[in-house]
Length: 355
Image (cartoon, rainbow, N blue to C red; front, side, top):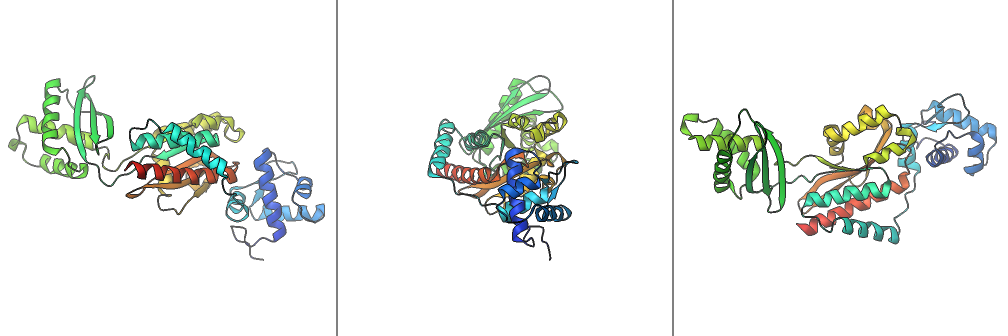
């Protein structure tokens, strides 16, 4: 018999026992023994036969024995087989769907921008799953600069405030090689707003780079200050959009599988640094519907004990981001998957109606 990694090569009996084992482990969090499988699986076989099937599943890598007890637990491969082949995800009931839509509308009621709408979706994901909700901020193909202001902070640090696409407000702090006076910053803002208001930020950046390559003698001090300030402000990928919204990280501390404080600390650091999570979620940008990363499949060691259930969302321009739930591999997939799928659709509808 040829055994496939997705379990399609397993016998019906082996699939039924594996499905029961995964379900029982997800529900109780304890290793599952042969007697429990005999009682719960509905398989008509002797205890010896079930033990033999369990031994074969273990050799094939679908389950493992965590210690000397007779019970076994699923491996990442076992979860993958369960999710891809054995799991039947029920459709969300009308009552559940209505509750999701109502809660989203309640949280997004005061949203002033697409980022606020995304944050509402993040909070809702976390609230409904009791896990961490993560949503990448919308990536827009066109960002028009409406206005830019510079405000002095301590030392050589400056607060940059940009209004783009008539509603999005970008705040960021830049640090330069010298201090600027309020007068210099105000003059630079006036110069840039008069010259670039309404222009695409990507084209503004290209213009600034080109002009800085010119002979500095060709510029007066005002132009030079303005261009240097603006280039520093735009050197943080404003034109592409970046970052993620996160909610409910502390929920992960409630799961025994993730209770190791060093693991939790590393996860929280990942949420703060964002880079690795962005790279992982980027893999779902082109997915058709829900995509699931189980344990080591993510490629990031700190997520080895986690599963990531993700789905892309869109606006009028097409796919612009990904939302996800991050929790232990021992999660109720049949409940989390439809929540992620429906939330992606709700967020897409909200963004399209805002555009």
